[in-house]
Structure formats: C-alpha cells, structure tokens
Image 1 (tube, rainbow, N blue to C red):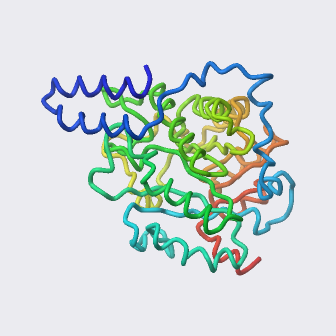
Image 2: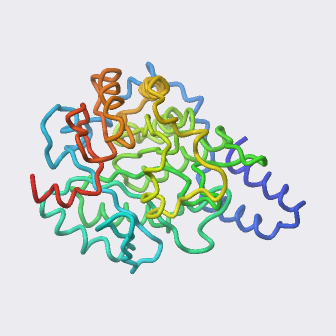
Length: 347
C-alpha cells in the first residue's frame, strides 16, 4: 500500500470513529505536499546497490571524509534545530549554549562560524505550530516547513557549507514516534519506510548534500538509496545512516530540543538495546549492503567499542560518531557535536 493510499485508508477508518473532518484535512494536506509513492524498490540497476559510490566524493568536503586523519575542522558537523517560527531564538535549557532558531535567525548566527571554518551542519526540524503534527508526520516534507526552507536558505547564502538533513518523523508525528503506527500502536515498518524515503527524497531535491535517516526502521537505507537512484540524485546526494543507534536515557536533552518525546510507549522496539553488540554489528553490515555511504554510531562516547567494530566491518567507509569525547580515537572520521563552535576556536 502506498503512502497516498494509506492516507485515504486512515481517513475512512477515522470517519467511522466520528473524526472525519480532522483526517480529511490531513489527507488533503498530505496529497498536496507528499511525494507520490514511487516504484523505486523495484528499480533495476547495473550491479549491486552498494556499487553506487559517486556521492561519497562528489563534494569537496565528502572527498576529504574519505581520508584518515587527526581531528580537523573538516571532520566536524554542527547540529542546528530549526523551528517554523521565523524569528524565534530560544535557548534549550538541557543543551547549554544551544538554541531553537527560525529561518530569519540562521544567517546572522552562521556567518561568524563559517568565517571560523565551519564546514558542515546537520538540520533538525522543530515544528511548533499546533497543526504541524499528525499521526502520519505529513508536514515533514512540507516545502514551507523549517528543514526545506533552511536547506534553500543556506545553499543560497553559504554555498560552501555542506548540508546534512536528518530524516525522521518523530518531530512531526502527534505520537512522537519515528514512524507510522498501526491501530494497536505498534510500529508499521513498511509504511514507515515508504514515508521516510519520501521525506529523504524531498530533502535531497531541495538541495541537501546528504540525507541521514535516524529512524532505525528496517530497510529504510535501501528504500532511500533506490529512490535517489530513480530521481537521478544518487551520484551527488550522500546517504549517512544512523546504523547503530542505541536506546537509553541520554536522548532527553535532544528530545527537549526537538520536541520529539513519545506520547505513548517508548522506542525500544526499533532502537538497539544497550549492550547489544551483536545486533549493532548486524545493523552495520545490513546498512553497508543496502547502500549507505557513511555509517554512524549514536551515542558515541558510551559505545567506542561499536565505533571500532564499525571501522572493522566497514574499513573502507567513513565512520561518523554523534558525540564528542574520544570518538575519533576509536576510528570515527566524522564527529557530530554540540561543541563545534568551541572546537573551531581550538583547532
């Protein structure tokens, strides 16, 4: 069942529950804003999907990521939380010195960092409008939403800055989970992958240099890669997968920042159990086979052994670490960190 058909099906179901007007609005908005589900999963390409290498070195920065080195400014990616309120600049108490910023605040904030040597950012959308969230996360790929607007703005004002777009639904769903739920509130992996891959394609089409699925749904790397191939973007849009993303209490500050705390249940059914080294190794190998260009480990400082495993399992691929302390020593060549502004002064 395609995403558009899913919207129609949910609309009929909820109509019987006397909520037809609400879902009808969701359906019309999703139809207008979401990509039509493609047949990308059946695309026939020459060779195995992991043979698609060009995106890994199509940009000067991604070319530098292919080389092993000591910590440099080129290795750093700075997280930005973008809201749908253009003039907002609100501190995040649980993440010291980090802010939610609207589009109008981005350029003045980024300019001095770019002058210091900032080379890359990763964007997280934080929709605050009451109508921005629904059961299907339909606003995730809204052309007027915070991520797509930020991609276009940064590309126009800082053309040398490498843009990574985090791809997930948790910030846009009313239930706060990273995918679409079934009637019993369990995760519908197939529908979630279809939706996630559409969102990734939207960000790539808007101009993101890299898409980074963080949802942990099975098979989403392959689905995204095939849709990028079908759209003619796989040669220049890099795919960085959160392959080994462990569940735990360390995400509290991030969820405060992104407004993505689940309203029911938890994410243990799709994020990896703490200490599950074997599962992490299998997930890494799976994502390599599905066409990932970069493998990420999160949270990194608690899982330096997994970073080392990732480097062992994928010795010819860049390894990214979402954290800051000791990660490059374990084998990571890319570090996503809230301390990038400080690093730019030190390096």
